[in-house]
Image 1: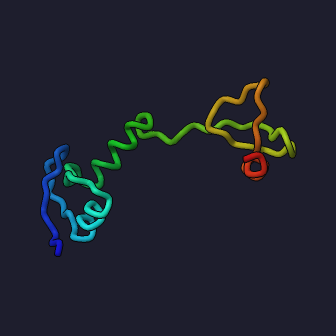
Image 2: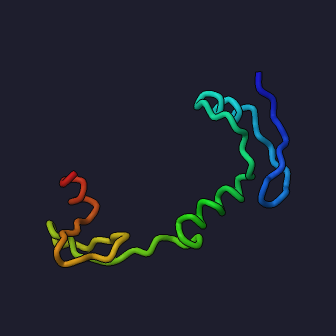
Length: 92
């Protein structure tokens, strides 16, 4: 039913293939517009939205339950408990 289409990326101007499988996926989800960016440009755009493409900064903390080490993506405060990943699952 679907056939591969060659599209041109809005950002870099390179051509890319919108595969039949991708078209079927878009149709199943009800997406009406074809992609306008190639995969590398989409990935770069997502990375920029997260903050300059850098990985999230992690902070060291001590778990409030077990006393073990914990790494969290926010600055720990003394007025809020911080849990390691194992203990966090128990509190959910």
